[in-house]
Amino acid sequence: MKVCIGLSGGVDSSVAAYLLKKAGYDVFALFMQNWHDTTGTLHGDCEWEEDRFVAEMVARKIGIPFYFVDLSAEYRKRVVDYMFDEYSKGRTPNPDVLCNREIKFDAFMKCAMKLGADYVATGHYCRKDVITGTDGKPVYRIFAGSDPNKDQSYFLCQLTQEQLSRAMFPVGGLDKPEVRRIAHEADLPSADKKDSQGICFVGKVDLPSFLQQKLMPKEGNVVEVYDAYFQDNAHYSLVHDILLSLRTDGGASGDIKMVTDYISETKSLKVNDPVHEYNAAGDPANEGGCSAPSPFSEDRIMALSDDSLTALSTPVRYDIKFETETYRSGKRHVKKTRYRDNPYGKIVGRHDGAQFYTIGQRKGLNIGGHKDSVFVIDTDIENNIIYVGEGHTHRGLSRSCLRVAPGDIHWIREDIPMKDGEIRRYRVRIRYRQPLQDATLVMRPNGLYILFDTPQRGITPGQFAAWYDRDEMIGSGVISR
Image (cartoon, rainbow, N blue to C red; front, side, top):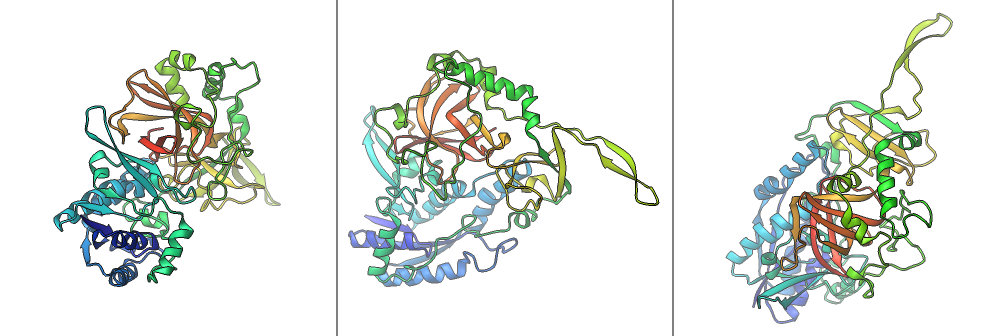
């Protein structure tokens, strides 16, 4: 069997190549260049020339043929142009997910097949198997990697059955320290190479500078939103009341929770209840491997109207008007203008373009005078306004429901799609490295709704939500709002 390894020059793909060769496969390496332009990139990070040099040394060390392919035209058209378009609309795309769907397991895979490959292998930390479907045909399944700290299944959430049928993931059952150990024992040139960061194949970038290749800067206001806005906001109250009405106890045990218990996924792999360790395999006692039964009544969810589900999944929009007043200042009583105090918010700064910012972002805002960190809670592209809030527990950062539009729903398990009106329990993540969250999925003609058991921080339109049955990834979709 002939296997093409996508050799990137990193330690993961190097060890994958080594293991395949050791297992007796007929292996050849293919290095792809996907980017030439250095505009906006931070010098020295993930430079393709160095990566190619290391990859070639690894192939020579293992004793496998080495080939090179330039896919930069495809990458620009199918990944980078998509990024620009999404950011221009105020959405935040995930280029790594797109790169895997459009490049690694499409354009690259086709190139590998032309060179005679039966399969394409990568260094992703995920696992795959195959079962026989009810129609007697093979069904390919993808699982989280064995190392919860390195699980990369999320980045493959848009792959199809055809793509999976040709894919291999040799390091998916290993943890990172073991991969490093194997690399050292095999004396691979990439053994101590640091993991790449930033945008897939572009590297670490200054995002505003990178986006300014096509998106023009435009100054606008940064508005801080105060807690009083939510106390008086009709939509926020409606969402609260709907969530409370869905509770299995009807709210008898107290008020509904609207703000998440923030946990940094880069520092801890625990669920929102810090007493329990994060369980990558899920709890077999509950549907979908969820850690606990749903706090919401299935019958009450089923009875919700489409309008109520739409309201649940729609974020609060901010419409804070600022009035000016004139006053006299100094000994000369110079006439000046200022904004009147507003109980709902305050203009706290300026920005270079709302399209350059994303929900949950805290770096690059240049806003001082706050005890806690300040985060972006919304962007208004039409009026070029950024709305921010102070602290991890700001109400504007948390939501309990999201929607995936019908055309953006993707089933990896094509044999078990949800039907209109159907409800299922799955575990869901809305970004890489986020511990899987218990949720109820509701399928309606106008889209798939994901109702989380607990509020989630930073639900971001344009990103992908991926759902799992225990540790098997079942499907994914683009968050529409």
